[in-house]
Length: 317
Image (cartoon, rainbow, N blue to C red; front, side, top):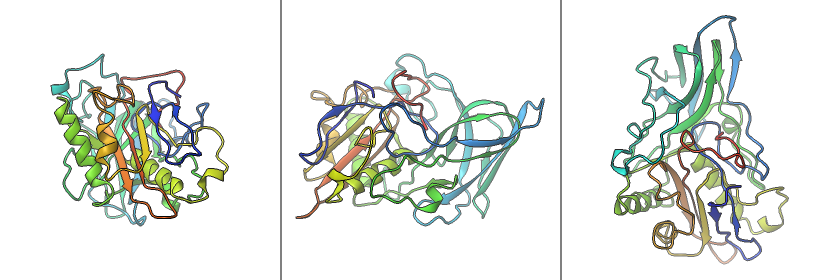
């Protein structure tokens, strides 16, 4: 995993590691074992020989209950590098030195949660599902950033199932290829997002957005860490569930703010990812503990993978 990455474990039985992974839209979050195993492929093509365009379709559901979500925005953005280090003032999810969304095709999901991007030019894209909003007032909905390649003809886009987390059983819609969107918990997650935005602004950096895969991964990792028997659970490879180049976690503290602030200067224990202007996606959660489980605060914040690659790190899901 990447040397600039740091994740602080909650219990004394877990060691301090450095590691990481690159980031940008695609399959799903959950731990990526050391060595670079990757999630299930993101799409199932039914190609038409000689076709230069793709009719790409998929389904979007509510991550809370698996019910279809209608009226959700779906767009394609070219998968291209953002450049060296763009000026922080220019960085927003759709004005970040990276390619902008294609003017067409664009879609919104129907009442069954289905979408189709008809006649999309074949190629490598960032699929964006959701508003990509930087607003940090309740309710905040995550956005899917998915790594897809359109190959021609009719192609079903599938969200990869996340690598498994011990003791955690994912919901069926998190493993069947459906895209899903989660809403932040106003008590355990939205305050973390507010703290992150405040720290970014204090350092002259633009606001970020909540990424679906990061959020799912954080939730599973924290739930696993609060299991009293988790230290003995079999989990080959990286025991922290990192899927990004920026990662921070700790036990204790009175709120998410104590963990978020430590990532920024002057301490900046998580490397330079929090203060890189290309770090646009974020997720974090603060779970209070009890006499039998630990308090857990975890955050993930990758550099946009269109602008960042590392041969030692798996591709963004």
